[in-house]
Length: 261
Image 1: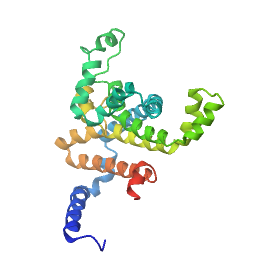
Image 2: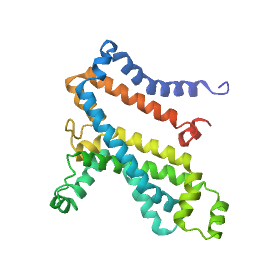
Image 3: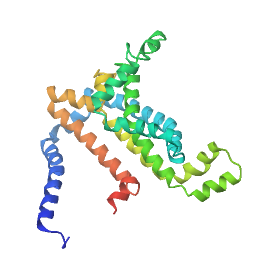
Image 4: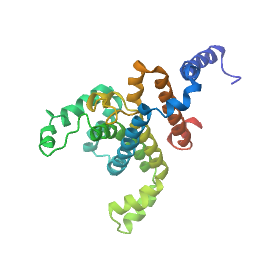
């Protein structure tokens, strides 16, 4: 710190203030005397119930399908894997409303698969299932990238020893790679769950904002801003607290490596 120049310190302080002041402002505007009433309001509880269903389902699906994908990305560097890796990255950089649009293009009633799904009674837009699908779409890349990094850290000697014993690739994954990368997997689970929890733009585009059906906590915050700003701030406080808990839980993992440097 003593070696830092004054302009550097001033710029850094400005950055810290820019990040901290919005949270301070939120805390200052919370109606603390109504906190209990707002936390138990029907609107918040309904949104919490939807969120409590969507986030675990999305996280489980992401782990089931994302772990094998992360393993393939980590193990194979063939040219045919490059477009797959690019495809994994696309949802991270897409504007959320475009994520919702592409989901509609695939799974909407007039979409690529929507008609076929509709014929067997499956309607995803404006449904709880559609909300979960949206959460899966936006959170899967975060899990895959975190776990791929963990798989790449598996010592090659361990993998070669397993191959010399003639174990199958599925056992190599389950008995060697996954146990070694369990820290990265845990971090990936937290990141995916946090991303699913915070999803807004793609959800409102694809699944709508139907109270009790598709309205998650972020969507409830948006709806409350117009009718009950005090409630919106309390829901925001809940989401900030959850985000802080995720950051705390990630200590020593991917984010912890950065913060501990």
